[in-house]
Each structure stands twice: as C-alpha cells, then as structure tokens.
Image (cartoon, rainbow, N blue to C red; front, top):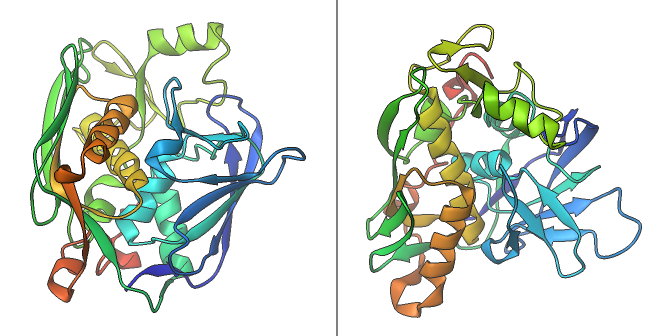
Amino acid sequence: MQSTLKTSFTLKGVGLHTGRPVTLKVSPAAAEMGIWFKRTDRVAGDPYIPARWDSVKQSKLCTLLQNADGVSISTVEHLMAAFAGTGVQNALVEVSGPEVPILDGSSAPFVSAILKAGLQRLFAPLRAISSLRPVEVTDGQATARLEPADRLTIRFDIEFADRAIGAQSRELDMANGAFVRTLCDSRTFCRQADVDMMRQQGLALGGTMQNAVVVDDDKILTPGGLRHKDEPVRHKMLDALGDLALAGAPILGAYRGVRAGHAMTNRLLHALFADPRNYEWVTCDPATARRLPGVGVRVADLPAVA
C-alpha cells in the first residue's frame, strides 16, 4: 500500500545558493498524488512543481525542478532521498523560496522529521518500476547504469585528486532501512578551492563548514572531521537515491554510478523511459514491498547526528 505522512512538519534553514532564510512545510497528500512542491512566495504563475524526472532542468551543483510556467525549486535531492528512504510516496512540500533548505548538508534532518511525524498507509496499491534491460549513459569517464534486479541496489565509485577523499567505492542493498542507518547522515562535500571559486561567481552563498565537508588536499577543514571515513561516496549514493526517486515510484534495479552526478542520473532516467522495452510497472506484492528502501524503518534506526 502507498504511504503519506500522518501529520505535517516544518523545518527552517537557509538556501545553499542564496544564503537566504527559507521555511519548508511537508504535509500529507492523497493516494496517487505523488510528491509535489509549492512555492509559497510566488504571486505569478503556477506555484506547483511536480517531483518528476521530466521536470528537471540543467543547473549547477544540485537538482532543479521547473514547471511549464518557469517556476522552479532547487536542491530537492536530499529531501527526495529522505522520502524514498522512509517509504513516502505522496506529500505536498511548501517552500518559501527558490531552494529547499540545506540544513546540515545531509538527509538526516528530513528523515528525522518524517519518522517523528509518522507514516499513514493509504488504500491504494503500491507500484514500482522494474528494470528489464541494462541502460547506460556516459560522459567522458563518468557513467551511470541501471540493470535488472529484484530490489534497488546502489554502487558508486568516485576518485578525487584531493588525498582527503581519493578513490572510494561502496555498494549497498537499499532494502529495509539501509538508507536511514547507513547513508542518510552523510553530508555534501567540496574542495576549498571550489568554494572560493563559487563564492566569486555568486554561488553557494549559504554553504558553511556546518553544512558541508570541506577538504583541502589531505586536510578535512570542517570541524569534527568526517562522520564516516567514506562519507563522500556515501553522500554520492544518497544523491543518487534522491535523483532516482524522481522516477515517480520505487525502482527495482541495480544502479551503478562511476564519477556520476545529478545530471548523469537524470539522463539515465530519460534513457530508461525512452524505450518501453526497458521497464515495466509492477504492483508490489508483500514480498516485493519488503525489499523496498523504506519498509520497517524506525526512529531508533537514525544515526546519532539526526
């Protein structure tokens, strides 16, 4: 069965790019509605934006959604990962500005708020998108690939010149709360040189040492260091789950990203849906439902930072 929230919750923070205060309210929604964003600050144009792969527009550093009237909302990936990782298929997200608040740079604050609000089962069948054939997109050394599987697994490989990151790989079966326990508290990361460059370009004005892991060659500049020794690759997996959630339903398939980013994962969804032979919609029986990421998640599964 599909799920939504039992009650609404509100979070306040700043936008990563503008640095301006922003308020986010997440409310329950009816079955079959899906995830929708609403820009509460807009006085012209349609304020509602669907959380779908075909609403994604090209942007730097994050995933940006835009509707037919040109109204947009950015930095949705961490919240979308939290929805997927807790099993929420229907919700209305009201935002007072052009960005979802960055909070601590991970999904943990969203996951904590969702689990404390509680989940409500809806009287509608839960459907998933099953991968039938391998689909792959590439861009230089970057690759994103989806292969058939009876559950969602994510493998990611990254390699950075900075010795504080270096080469990292991780693979995870996303079933039964693995996202909440293993990935949700992993923060976005960047190089100090990139921070300086982005600030000069008027970007990442809300980025701080409190909402990102900042590295400079072999040094971790963020106070307290890493939450996990492989926190960067875990965060890339978190981003991938959030971007895959824009498919509109849970995906049954094996995802692999090699040096991939938001744009690559969105290109992969475009390739997946470009040919009906690549996928099929399935109604989840109890055995399939038990293999989905959000099943059986409890507040006690949250990492201590949440």
